[in-house]
Length: 153
Image 1 (cartoon, rainbow, N blue to C red):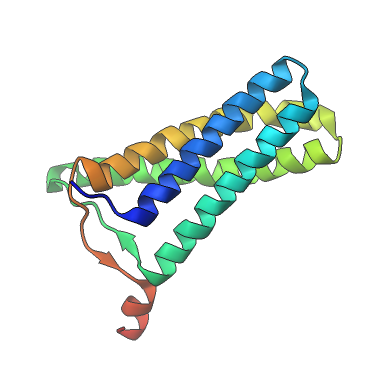
Image 2: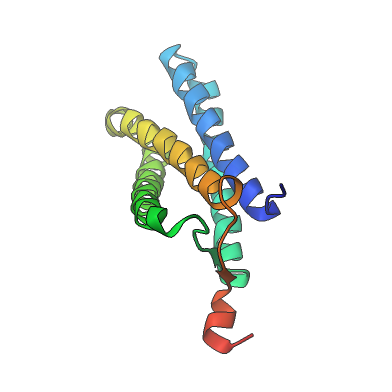
């Protein structure tokens, strides 16, 4: 079995960001503020690299349709929408959490940080599940680029 390179790299980056979040969360519980800050910034960089790869691939290569059995497509699509909602929520909350942490707005940071971390951990888990469903458990469906869909090339 072969898996596509860019989705594999981007999934690795999301898993890495979740690991950084989990380690960073543990560090702040031990009052290691500077180590926490570095770990959370590493998580943000990993997530940003994921986003750059994902958007670039979506624009230039396209998105892969679910290639599994038709009777599972509605469940996959529902799961994918759930994952996308988690990811968007996690990205917005993550941006706010990083901003409030860096600006020492710690009351707000302490409220939003744990919620954001949990959402991001679930985002990573569901992201891995989407990857497995698209590329490991089933052969991916058709992939069409935005440019091809719009301009015909």
